[in-house]
Each structure stands twice: as C-alpha cells, then as structure tokens.
Length: 421
Image (tube, rainbow, N blue to C red; front, side, top):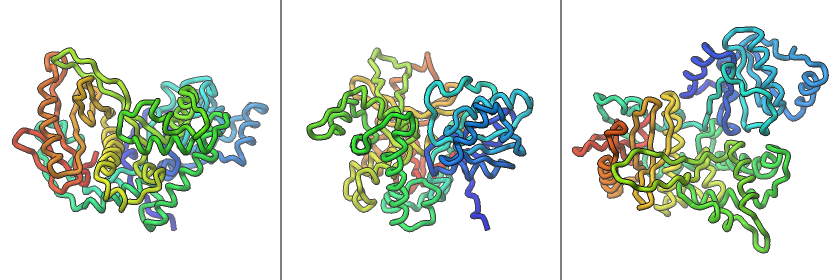
C-alpha cells in the first residue's frame, strides 16, 4: 500500500498552472518531494536515469523520434535535465498538440547553459519546490496566515507548543520528507548522504568540469559557519583554501555557481526601498542553504550542540525562517529579501508582493531580543518615504516563542510554530 501523501503548499500552484500552461517544470533540491508531488497529478510517467539517458538521447538525436512522449497527459518526466534535449521536445510537442496540462517535468539541477534551444516561455512554467516548511511537516499549527497579514483587518492570535528543544530537533532533522517519521540518527544520516552525493559526484556532473571534493567540502563548511551573514567572498575563499594550496575568486565563483544550480544554496538578495534620507544601501546577499539541516550536517553538529550556542542557534533559526517564508509567500508570487544600509541599519527579512505591498520581519529566538526587534522595526518604518512607496502592511517579530500577539506599538509577535501560508 502506497504511503499516504502529505499535502504541500505548492500543490495549488501545480493544479492551477496545469490548467493554463502546456507544461510545468518543478525544480528544487534532491529528495525534497518533487517526484512524489508530481505523481499526485500525473497520469503517466517517464523517469530519466543514468542508465537509460543514452537511450532517449539516441532516439531524439539520431532518429528524431519523440514517441516516448505519447503517455497519457499530464505525463511526468522525472529528472529531465539528464537529457536536456527533452526540453525542446516537450516544447515542440506542446505546440503541436495545442492543449494545456500536457507535461510535468522535474529537475534537481539546472542543465548547462545553452543546452536547450528555447526558453519555453509561454509553454513551460517554472515552479520552485523546497524542503518542507514547519506547517507542511506538521510542527506549525498554522494559526497565523502570512497572506492574512497583508489584510489590515486580520486578527493575529495563536499559541505554539514548540520549545527551543523541539525547534533545535526539527532544524537538525530538516524538511526532507523521508526524515519525518524516521529516527533522529537516521534523519541525520539522510542529510549526510545528501551532502556526500553533492560533494563526490553532483558537483562535477553538473557542468562536466571536475571539482575537487575536498575544496567543495571546505566551501560548504565555510558557508555553514557564515549562514545568515554578509560574509564576503574573500572570507569564504580564505576559509576554504587548503593549507599550502590556492583557490582563486574565479574558481570559488565556479564552485558556488554549481552549488546554486544544484539547489544546495539559495542566497538572500538585498531589498531596495525608498528612504527619507540619502543613505547608501548594501547590496550584498546573505548566505543560506536550501535547508537548515545542511548547516548542522556540514559542521558535524547536533541539535544539543546548538542549544548550548545561542548565537549559532539564532543564525540557523533565521535560516529556517527564511526557508519557511519563501514557501509561504510563493502562492502570493511574493519575494523574500533583506535590508541593510552603510550605517549598519538592517532588517532581517522583507516579504514583498507584486503589487507593492510589503512587510518587514525581524527574527529573534525570544526574551529581551523581541523588544529589540520591535524597536528596530518601528524605527525602520519611520525611515520609509511613503510619498514614493506604500507603508508596510505589517511589522513582525518572528520568534521561537509561544504566543502570537499584536503589541501596542502595532508590531506583531508571531511564533514560527504558528505561521503558515
């Protein structure tokens, strides 16, 4: 008997896009659930593997045959990037049929540039899938809706039973579907195996360029030590270079590009608002992995270890909040970014919608840090030039605490264990 499917927030997007697009591509890190979700919608499937990719490549290049695309629609083509020509074949087939909802492609890496002839614009929609948010995995009770926060009449109220120990445990486990019902030991092994595959094979396979596993490992460790920070490229380079060895910035950029194309990393871009004063904004991105468990695995740390290191716990907690806000804002076509200027004024996260609505978020574990975060948000609100842009729809301190409330100053305090899309 097949294991019961756990609903994902992306499900609604998949259903809607199949109704108005010829095909969709669901891309994201390995083991995040892309195939399982696609199987809920697909009526036939084709799985591309290392052993059969040559067969399909030969059919297309030598025989010019797309016969393998004749499965009942929507047809799932899993890990299509192993045979990049499938992209153009799908695009052509969609044009020839003139119907919607024909194909669902999945990919855990971005193929080499120039490997496809067409962008797929108007035919193939791209959707990003991440590991499971706390609401999807069942840790968040969902009593506070992110979309609701953009409604001025929405009432914030909720209680989270998650303790700091609970949050440390789910950070270590990560949002990998296969880990949810497994033991703590096995969950850590799943992340370790994921990293091992990236380091020893995927990094070189992504563009056909050999990459040193030890250099890859050191770069990943450096990013883990600097997660949720503005560490410079030079800092990462210095920490990753081997004793007696060399690592140029250009080589580092090649490694980082491969990590991004494998959906191992997903940096947080800077936000560019209109301010009342002329202040230079910092455009550096913050370092993040696609799942917070990667940080602990890379550093060989445990949930118990981060509980004893408040600062490190706070940075990894922030990274988990980034992942969840990205997932919750996706149905709104929203983006998540950060703000910082050259006077070191900063706001951890900005959630912005296409129509110009936005909210500012400070991430704090709890205690006196909540007061500090709220004061910073109130100060930041006064700096926004509301003659040139909208005022914030909400100001929120996202915490590891228990109670969701609205403070007298208008700032919302919301536990991550209450939040949902």
